[in-house]
Length: 447
Image (cartoon, rainbow, N blue to C red; front, side):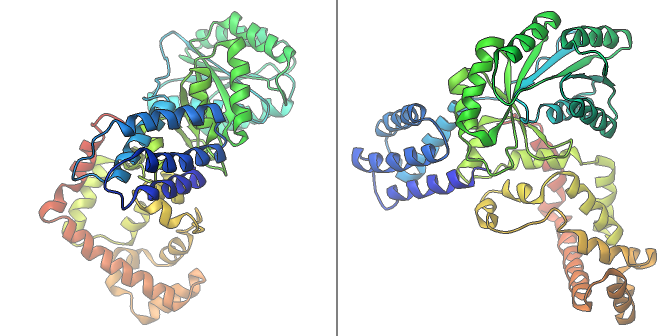
């Protein structure tokens, strides 16, 4: 995510390294490179110029503290302006109403249907809502079938009228159905086209006028760059929607849409899609995104993802086992499962400050744990519970059973032993408060 932009911005800040103070000359050189980096990321020339002009004005008016280098000051100013450009703070989803009606709009192929299901899953699992999905794309039977399949995956009901070709009537009937059966959120998926056309705009406008939604969300493929921004403007001119959803942000995107949509349409980015799985959806936090663009990581989001899988009682039991040096391979497997639930492994590592750049060219497969799991599952319950009994003959059998080399088995057991020692050390002294500290981090306001 934003790797190309991050690299180019980092190179531009190097111009100020070695300088004792900020001057109009070295700022101009730095911002020339910053502007190039933004243009390469598919930010429009007008916005890129406005951005660098604002940064220049603020940089030249700053006094350098002895403890802060010009380069560090410039990074902070650019970070603050990136945050402002993308919307300053996160925008809450309006959930007032009984039921709450959410209308999803966008072009064909933007990821509307998948996002509708992700949003339903998000509202159900994280907000305790009872959502109903509505199949309002009457032109593509595949879209209706897709929504039904996704609904089954997340255990959310889908309202569809396969024979009805009037999307306005379907939407109104769905709301009546939702009220009758106690659904408190109704998410209406709508038809898209390959390009903006008058027929589509008239249809989506008619649906909005008939159902009066609390939220109208425009879904756009972030990989289309400035085309995404232009489409966002065209839709907003007709729909006056409430927020933007950027999908496929985990793909090979240059980031121009994320950086400029807010400035062009003056509507907040509310969610981002970061993968194909139903839980691969994040609330958009401008400051956290600026952190990631500038290579600072996103430790707050990482902790939040960990805490979604964090079970206090299980953690307490695990801490006791670690303190008694009873942490075993069954516990290790449970920890792996929790990590895998958090999302894409490379994305998670990229949230750690300083790690994203180090791993950008590494191929880290989501199945990175598969070999480890195969070895552990090839152990007997007794061996998983008491790793000390793993002698040579047992290790050989495990290697054959897991399709591994004996060296891989030996290495895993050695690393596990070292992990046991490290975890036991963490339960003593300052380390014993680690879990409590992580829990408290979640109480801090999101950046």
